Image (cartoon, rainbow, N blue to C red; front, side, top):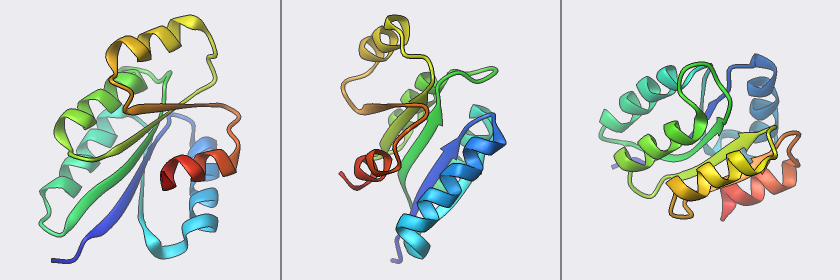
Length: 129
C-alpha cells in the first residue's frame, strides 16, 4: 500500500497560506502532498477525504487559531480524535495567557504552538520532530 504524506494548512488569510506553501515547498519539495483550506470546516472536509482513501495518511495539520467559526485549537482537537499519529501545529498572533491557557487545558501536549510571524526553521523543525 502506497502511503502519501499530507500536510494540511488552515488559515482564513490567503497570504498566510501562500507563505506556508512557499516555505513547505522550499523545504520539502514533492515529499508531501499539500492541502490548503480557508476555514476549519473546509479543512475537516479535506481531512475526511484524505482519511477515507486507502493509500492516504494525514501527517501534519497546521492551523491558525483565530478564524471565523471554529477556533484552531478546537479544529486540531477534532483532528486528533479522528486521525491517529497526526502532528498538530497551532499558529497564532495572539500571545496572551488566555490562548495559552485554553490550549493547555484542552490538550495533552499534542498540539504544538508557534507564534506569528513564525520562524521558518522553527516550523520545519516542528514538522520534522
